[in-house]
Amino acid sequence: MWQYLYLADRELFMMQLKRYVCIENIWEKLMDLTVFPLPVAETKFL
Image (cartoon, rainbow, N blue to C red; front, side):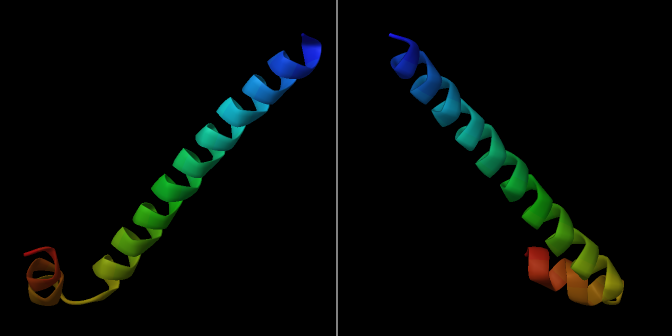
């Protein structure tokens, strides 16, 4: 029983971790885009 709870909790933790890493990667990409001139950033988004 405890082992099952631990595994479920760990799975949830891994999901949260992946979500956080995803957000971090997206944020880094956005920060990279701001380095470029604005027209270049707009064409990348389109």
